[in-house]
Structure formats: structure tokens, C-alpha cells
Length: 412
Ligand SMILES: Cc1ncc(COP(=O)(O)O)c(C=O)c1O
Image 1 (cartoon, helix red, strand yellow):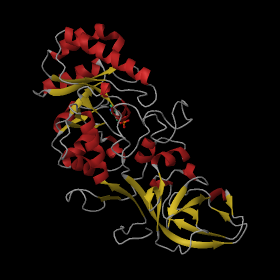
Image 2 (cartoon, protein in one colour):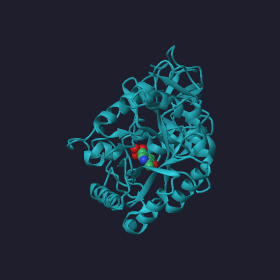
Image 3 (cartoon, protein in one colour):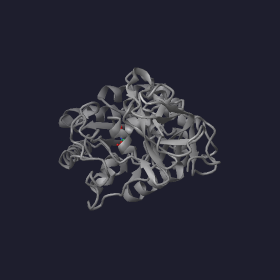
């Protein structure tokens, strides 16, 4: 459909299908049960809108919501979310009061951060629930698994002072989508660290590790809680990175190429939840030999009809899609011509009859029988699905469809 009455009047927008997102979440929750689930809604729910997403998912009674920073948690509280909220990447300079004011739980990424949280909460005459991260191979934060025997007595001692309650112990997988042996080793290291803690009398209410890839692949990773992110938002390529990209380890683009099909206990691919759309600002007929956009990197080979779309890199359409990306218009895939600009982008509609101003083009997602999948979009732009979603610009209004009445009341 090129235009419909339900389309918002904007020049471009991100359409978020809350019903699809909720179905993805329900599928994960059911698949991982009896493990509880913690939807990761950090980075504004991967760009889709943290408050709207959290409101929609709250109905599924998740154990908690996962955010990265205290302000992200505070935003959810202001949006009326009363459930537990866990801050997974608190900075060393974050004030404990920020956590306490918004009733947030916090990861402890080191002995120093555990001690600081404990002292801050005790000074405020309260207790804060903490989630202890164990580094089993990610190598960025967390108490090193190999040194658990050394740090366990100090953890036990800090816990005994009264300012913190240990709510869980967890780790984060680096290659759950691509390297089962490494993931299994990480799990073994987590279990070993947990048993050293338990032997020292530390009670661990929940042990957890699974991101989307791990939830999808193997029930052994489900443990007490699962922490899916990208799966909820319709992404299926996790930690492998771009195909042939950073490590070259990614198995390919389609969900099946990732090795899921036929894997015992695997979860099916998620439904798509995000769609990026833009209107045609203008249609122009260019003579052969005309140049297009900055740097004149495209020259028409014959008489060509170009449609200028009201979307550019400031809206999250990557500049890397210049002369490479595609759009769908009137049900037909068309190529981007010339450089993606800050606010506008030209596509070749010579082969599409009847295109006119205000028509709606789809840059990401399905339109009629055609689709530009998140994986394809990311690969063409030389990036990963996570970055595509989180880079969708603040300037694009979010338009919610398919949600419960209080979450789908239009754009913002
Ligand atoms: C601690 C933690 N858990 C879970 C996730 C969710 O990962 P994914 O989006 O791959 O499911 C993330 C995201 O990076 C994370 O940082």
C-alpha cells in the first residue's frame, strides 16, 4: 500500500508494531519458562520507545525491566512503570541517590562498585538490591570468574554490612549466536563462581546469563532469568556482528543460515516490529548525464525519474546506504541514487508508474509483497541490527500500531 488513511501526516516516521513485539515477548517468556524474563528496554528500547514498549510488555508480567543507566530507569518510573528495574551499566560516578530516588536495582560490576552501592544505601538508611556481574569471557566488566575464590570472602563481607541485598548473579555471553563451545564454557565458569559463593554461605536467588541468541538456541542457558533484547524488536542476528564484518564469524543473514532451523529446543525467528517510512517530497525527471546529490556520485545514464524522500542520515538512514540502499514504493523495490543527505534521499522510480508527492516509501520493513528485512538493511549498511535500530533518529516520530489502548494512542 502506497498511502493509506491510517498513515500519519509526517514526512517520515518509525512505525512500531506493539502487537508483534508483545507476541515476540510472549513467545520468549513461554519458551524460557519456568525461567522468568527481563526484557531489555535500554537505549529507549533499542530505539523503539522505552515507555511504550515497557507499558505493552508489562502486561506479560516480566520479572523486571533491564536498562543501562539510572536516567533510563528514572524515565520508566516517570512513565508509570512500577515493576522492578535493573540498571545494568551504572557508571562509577553515578550517585546511589539516583538509584534510590527512582527505586532502581543495580548491577555491581566490581568489588569497588559493590562497596560503593552498599555504603551509599546504608548512609541513606536503606538497602539496595544488587546483581553481581561475573566476567566469564566478555572481558569488559564484572568480577573475573577465574578469581572467584579470591573475591568471594570480600563479597560476603560487603553483603554482611547490610546496605545491599544480593538479588542475582549473572554473566553476559559474547558469542551466543555463533560459538556454542565458547558459550558453554562461559556458562561453566558462571556456575563454578556461583558454587564458590554458595559454599561461602552466600544465597543466590537467581543465576542468569541468556541474551536473545542464548534463549533461542539452548534451554541449558535459561537458568533462573533470561534477558532478551533484540529478539523482542524483531532482530535475529545477535552477537555475531555484520556478515564478514569485525570477526568474520557471523554465519550468514537468514535466521536459518544462523543455524537455528532444526536445532533441538530452538525458538523460531521473531516477528518484525519496526518499519521506517518516508513520504515523497518531490518527483523529478532528469535528463541523461544529470548528477545527483553531494559529490555527484551518481550520474543518470538515461532519462530517469527520481523521487526525493523526506528522510536522511539525521533520521538514522545510514550515509553508507548512498548508491547502495533500497526503498519500496508502490510495491516495487527501487534503488537509492547518489548520497544520502542529512534530510533527504533520492530513489530511482523510473520503473514505477504513477509515483507522486506524498506517496509513502518503506526503507525498512515489509510493504505489500516486498520486504527490506532488518538483516538486509544492516548488511547493506555494513553494520549490525542493533545499531540500525538504536540509530533511528530522535527526529522521526514513533508511530505505534497494534498496541493496547493506552500504549497505542498515536505518535510522539
Ligand atoms: C547485560 C545484558 N543482558 C542482555 C542483553 C540483551 O542482548 P540481546 O539484545 O542480544 O538479546 C544485553 C544487550 O546488550 C545486555 O547488555
